Length: 242
Image (cartoon, rainbow, N blue to C red; front, side):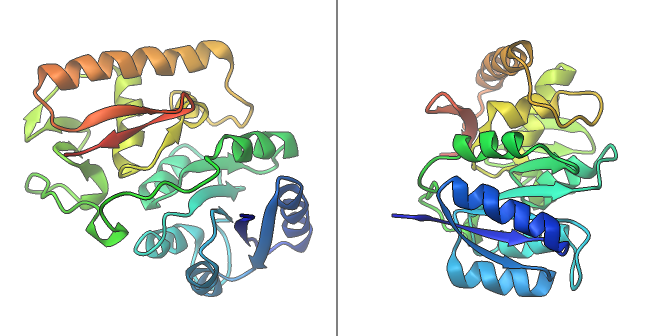
């Protein structure tokens, strides 16, 4: 079955470039330049992947992602000229899977598309049920999954604080806000960087992710967490709650 993509981009030249890249990667492409229209288009065509600009008419890309996550598990790749520290984190908190700064290299986007599973992951729980496990008081649903939560920078298991190294914190934060969706090693490696860059992570950065995940598994087990970090076909990781 042919995979489907939605492009949300208000600049015609970039929209045309994205369309060419996605079509060459095997996607049937639909496009819009307006945030409100994007939500309805995604609802209608149920795309496997969505590329999403932030600064668009109607509602911005962050709000599009938040609304879309109420009904869709489309793989969201933010592609934006907003590359200040914190922009990628805002994208992930809104429900994005990856964040690519403009200008971008077509080969970088193609590499990310190639890493997306051929079929979207379907979970036993519906998207509306994500975050049904109540987080500790004062914690927003966007920062909790299963019995693992983040509150004001403090990582907790079933309400009890756990001590994490900076790299472990960056990786676990990405996994928590993904709410059970897979985060590729590529994207997790980008989260470990201390400044905004768009070049592909090297082998050392990927190994740093793998080491962080291994130590996180040990610390979560020591804290008797019921939420697990699972590997996804060697391409990335996701959280799974009981």
